[in-house]
Image 1 (tube, rainbow, N blue to C red):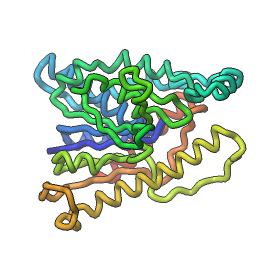
Image 2: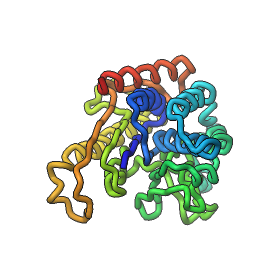
Image 3: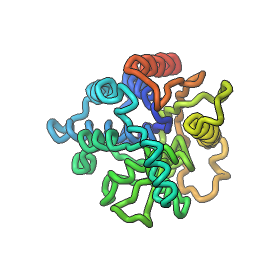
Image 4: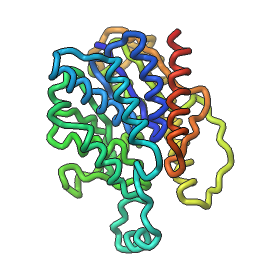
Length: 302
């Protein structure tokens, strides 16, 4: 089985879009797509578009899937308010005091886009398998949801909901069943793809192996949250990919796996930090990041 595995990274998902283009240009046709955070959004859009095409002509044109994904980013992710609107200090203060804090951003703009572009029935009828990862904030457990689940779209929203910055998502409206970004536990879901039987994998991460971090104003709440996220996500990403890179050589010693096939793994990730801020970006930034992702992936693949 061929799998495309898309890691998390917030707006770095634009870098991933460029890398996806280079991968698809090689003729790779995924049968399964896995995603976490921004990768979950990209994965769901691709599977949804593949479902539309398959319903129309029983065929998936991956070049067209790629073009539609590029167009989605260039037309819909052009400025911070396309993702969310920063809540007022007054409302944040009151909500915090009343124990009803629900994120720094109002993410309705992003969620409205998901409603417009992602259809559950289309996902279910798509010939491409899909799984997205999110974390239960009560139990701490990771859950990989697929479109056959009743509340899949809630899990998708949760997978891309950054802790503290964005609200926890109640699955099916149940406040006891709340989830957040899967990046709290895993960032690049290669292990899940292998567990499900993938034997050829393209994994696209969005952080470099080693990061050179500039000093920040750690007394600025948003800057501090962003830095904490970057540090933890980078480490989790390294752990995920190092595990995958050593999978074949440790095949006989891994407990709990019934899989005995070696995996062909191609990892694509940036050499340097992808600089694009959730609270301060333009369409030109998005274009530049997409281009950088394509150029890096093209170099890896040729």
